[in-house]
Length: 198
Image 1: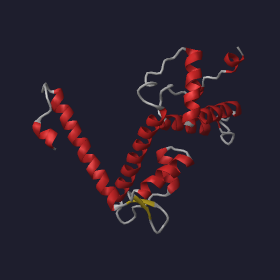
Image 2: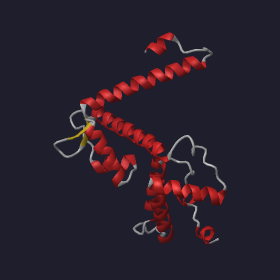
Image 3: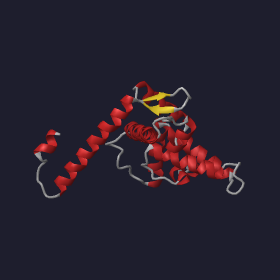
Image 4: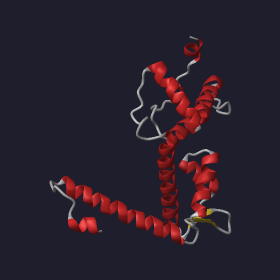
């Protein structure tokens, strides 16, 4: 009984779907935190700011979110479609992969457009990605460790040669996949031999 009275729908607080990925959760929190922050005189709302912060803290950790999801289901009757097939950790890994691809594409475009000044400041890049400090540090660590990005002499972040090769390779795979889907959707009953060999 007490548990029911103390239950808070954190997904409703953050205005996200219960099965959203970690990145969506983070973007929603940052938007609300910025909107309700006491520094914004027009939209400041301390109670809403605290509620959004509490909700995000409860959901950003995979273990805590899994425990909360069980409570959420018991209270609301909501059945998580992905509960058996995709674990929270797997959803987070897929979300991270999307951020890595987005980061590389942003830096790739910058190098293509401004070859003599290819770097992007960490703060600017983090703002474009809309991620927390912890998540940003993780993404940059990973991409640097893989040799896909580098720090310039000016202290900015830029895509490396290996990163450019990676983006081009992934773009070719994506284009090939689109071609296969298009051909398959046009009535072919099996994958074209040339597409499979590609």
